[in-house]
Image (cartoon, rainbow, N blue to C red; front, side, top):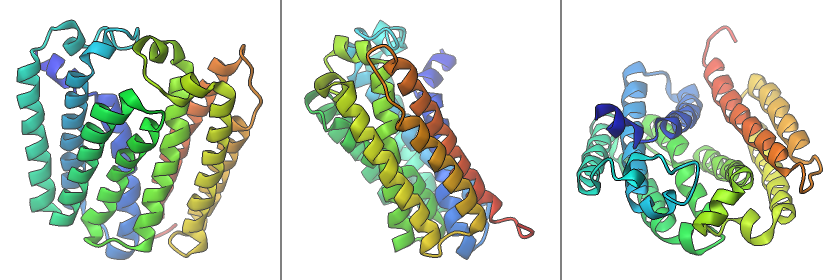
Length: 287
């Protein structure tokens, strides 16, 4: 049963978001200094809040999860976990995560993580995901909150650097999410979720993805141009962004779109991991 309750928090999503938290924390620590305990508490607090949002998502999406081959085995969709018990679990996770950030980091980071939770649960999960092709855009706002919280936990203030970080991760979310929707398109059709590849077709989705990857590249490099990062960041970011552009700008057809979208998705993971890691490496004195 414990394993089941862990599974409905979607550990894979939590880990992915914690990588982006590291990006924000490392970026801020360049000027504010490293604080190991603060990093641990920030990761813990964000992880608990994200876990809460994922549990709520599982509760609310039980009906559509039953229609998608990827999600049919989820315990809430199968009725193996009681929805009321899961809701109480989600509330405990939310309160615990917010309290950790409030007490061990600062109130601003706690407020921002709650805003991200509201966007994910109420605006994305309960509203736009089921009703609008712009659901992915709304979801990208909540997806860009973890790195911002990582930054604010260190600085306790919002700066141009923080806004660039937020914009960068908003832009990253779009092609990443569209790629998933494309190679899982039949699932989304079965569940009647109006994502762009389903509503407007794969070619229009590809054009949007190319535009977002190009915009992401510009914003990511602006971090260096404005003096917020070093030459190590420039080297790694230029490399991973060029790779993502090459992969995304490849042609696709009805026969190749699944393979193409999986390549875009996998590359997006490499991009965010590479940028997060190099921001951490820049903190090492001898680099």
